[in-house]
Length: 444
Image 1: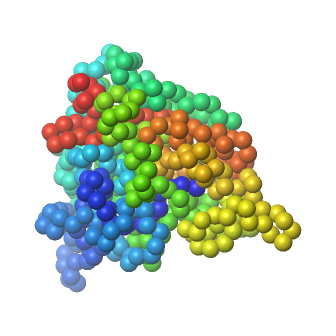
Image 2: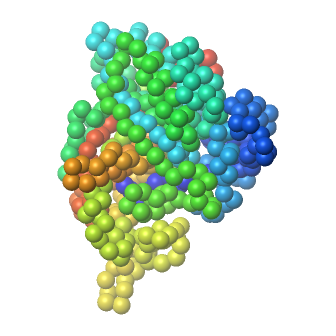
Image 3: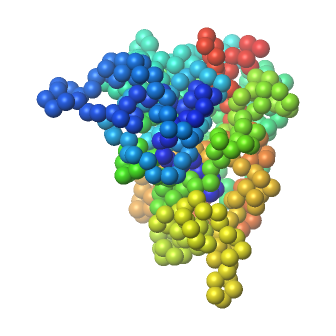
């Protein structure tokens, strides 16, 4: 849980490039409910017609999608269904798309005997289904009608390949070196059955039924070609739930998302996206990224025994507003050298926010886009809850790995979390019109 998570605020994309994987929303900022006396609410057809007619791209006030921490006018909940992300584009959706309220992560293994041909057919089916559902259309033949009355609800579907995929399809020579297995960490208590996988799918939406509908469609599309290896469900605060857009909180109650890299920063592309040229990655990964996925259980009973002040010293930030203990507001630069009257560092040397700062890790940075999760209580009433940690970077050996190694050596938060599952996936660039995701790998 580095101090770099993506803020929750729904702020418009500032460029056409970010817009291609941002959201096309008519009325997200100004949606209205049906007039009094109307029957049945806003219809799916009406939502889609309105979105297509206006062609707005999440407003036009400037700023990068989902990154601004400054207060803005609240998004009315009645506009949630109208948000639409674009399937085709330079990058896949679901990476810089603003945080969604619901999420599903699912990994598949190819079936025995399935190879490159079957994988290509599967990615073609998945891409067509994702394109349809993200436009608010039925999945195709055999649609379950789960989301029949909903708009697109900012649905995104993102696809990636695991290390084992390349041996199963005879594509070992196309496997990126950056996809080598992650090293072991002292905080790991990994369940291998819930880690890795040949194929990975990330689903996000602002409506739970829309998200489940996409999950079910993806699972059905797999058919005999692949079987589910593991699946996890997550959530975030719904847009419009607060008086103004705010940085998200995690299940520890901490503001979690202040220092995420922003597309407006000069080095964002270099840190997050695989370049089109001049890279050691294979050509099919151009404009893609690498996703590290970790199921991090929060030991909430232990955490909640700490006083608020003790919790703040573990993190290095005030719980109320996310401001650094050295003073100021949420976005104020942390003063790592400031001391109190007794000469003690105000931000403790092992505080989580201090350890995870890029300038304390040789500039290592990653774009974090997590979901919280809760999978019930054990027989003693202990919650199985925490974070579905997802981070994006051009090279995990320069992004995730050095920061996690630093955390391993003395993060105060380590006593209150446990890493229970892990995966690393190569996520290729977006599909052009007429293409499916991964086509340049599978047909190259």
